[in-house]
Length: 415
Ligand SMILES: *Cc1c(COP(=O)(O)O)cnc(C)c1O
Image (cartoon, rainbow, N blue to C red; front, side, top):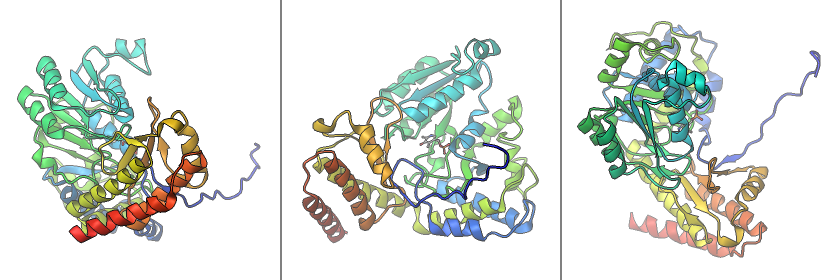
C-alpha cells in the first residue's frame, strides 16, 4: 500500500444482527443521525438536545440521580467513567460469571492495583485489595454467594453485572443492593445488557451507587452515540473527596456538557469535549422510541418473544442455559456438539449474525434485540433451523413453523 492507493468506497451489507448486541438500529435513529445539520457542539439545539436526553434517561432508568447522562463511545466508555472512582489500594469485591464481568473485574484490578502491582503484571495485574469471586459460566450470581463474600470482606466497593451477556445470565440485583447496604459497601453495576430490555428502576436499589450501560443493546442507538451512566450523590461525594485520575472520563467533569454542574441542573451545558450533533440527534431519537414503546410493555414483549425462540430451539434438540430475555444461549444437540463455531460461521456468511460464546465452554448465542414481532422471530428460527439442517440435523421445517404459529395464536388469544 502506498500513499496513492485509493480503496474503493467501503460498502457494508445489510445483515440481520441476531446476537447479544449490537441490535439492529431503528431506521428513525439512522435518519436522525443523517439529517442533523452541521451544528457545532455549543449550538443551542445541540445543548438543548443533550438536556432533553438527560431527562429522558432519568425517566427510562427510573431515577432522580442528577448525575445521569451519556458518555461518548461504547459500553466500556461508560463503565470506565464509573470504575474511575476506584483508586489504587481501594478494597473491592467483584463477581464475575462470564466474559463481560470478567473484563470488568480486570478493569477494576487495573485501577485498584498499586504501582508495584501494576508493574509486576501490567496487562493483568493481581491487586491484593481486589477479591474476584468467579461463578461458573452458565450460572447466576446468587444471594448466598453475594452475602458470604460481602460479609467476609466488607469492601469499600462491590461490583456485579446485572445481566451477564457472555453466558446469558441474570444476576440477583435485589440481593446485591441489600447486601451492599448491610455491609457498608458501595455497589457498582454493569447494566449494559439490561437497560432498555428489563423493567427496573435504579431508585429501587439504594445499595447501588453507580450504574453504567451502553448505546447498542436495549437502547438501540449504535451509530456511535452515548453510554448511559447514573451516579448517586454518595458516589459523586466520593469522587469529589478523593479525585479521579482522568479528565475526559471524569464522572463530575464529563457531566458538565449535559448541564449538570455542582450537583445541580443548569439551563445549558458547558464545554467538556466536542460532542457530535449527529450523535446527539440519534441518541435523542433512540430515547424517544424507548419512551414511546414504554419500559414495561417492552420488557413484556422481550419475555414473550424470547419464550417463542426458546421453545423453538428446544424442540430442535438444543439445550438452553440462559435466562435473559434478549438472548438465548444454547448447547447444540449431541450429534452436532463441537461444531458450534462452524455453525455460527455458516450463518454469519449468509448475513445471519448469530454468535458463539467468547469464553469456554463454546455455546451458540442468538439474540432478539429490536426483533420483537412474530415475523422477525419466525425468520430467525427458520434461518437457524436451515443452518442446523445443512449440518445434518434431522428437522421438519414445516413442523417448526407450525409450532411457532401455534405459540403466537395461543398467546394472542390469552391476552
Ligand atoms: C456488550 C457488553 C459490554 C461492552 O459493551 P461495548 O459496547 O462493546 O463497549 C460490557 N458489559 C456487558 C454486560 C455487555 O453485555
